[in-house]
Image (cartoon, rainbow, N blue to C red; front, side, top):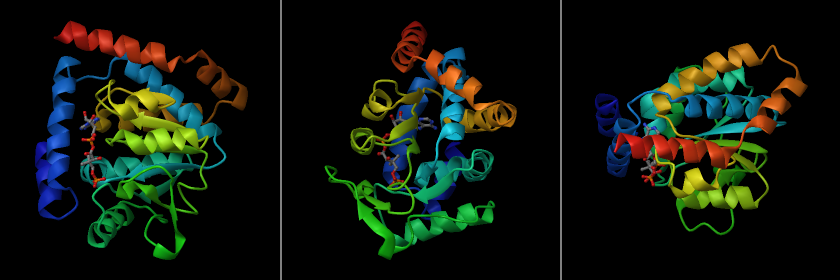
Length: 232
Ligand code: PTJ
């Protein structure tokens, strides 16, 4: 993972802040035993149900996620019929285009967030994450975010959207504000979700709804936190 991020940094995909963010994630991952816990797996299952049930879902991609698992994110988007949008905190046109190029190389046919004419703004956020695609994140009812800072998640939830997040820190603002919080490393979470989606795509709507009904995000995060405490 470190090598992938350093390579991504050299290619201009990952920002230096992304390397620091990875270090923070590693700390929690060590405490969790660097494995997908049963609570993380339950959240991954609930997240796939939500993606499959949504009218329009989208996966938001930043520098770290592109460097770590671009191909798997494209596969997940195909399995769940979700769109893909590049959305960056440290925004630059060069980096946006470089990330989109990687996603296309890995099989993405459509990538949102590139056309400035389609730019729309999420209110109440001061960072560049406020710029989203009006045909992408702005239009979607379920947004999948990973490894990011909390202000956008809070705003998306206020806008009535459902947010799924992947964050190894269950106490981060993103984790706390999401509807489904996956406390797992993204490099394990996405392959798990691909496998889960292959099984769940055959199930009917009522089964998927029941899974979501049975899932309690706050309780699930609490259990992850207890495991981290045990790790300490
Ligand atoms: O590419 P950009 O410009 O959009 O910037 C991306 C970063 C990551 C720099 C930016 O979003 C940022 O600064 O995020 P934060 O606030 O550092 O939040 C990142 C969160 O992801 C932290 O809570 C980390 O614990 C967590 N994290 C880091 N690596 C992983 C992770 N969670 C899951 N899997 C990981 N591999």
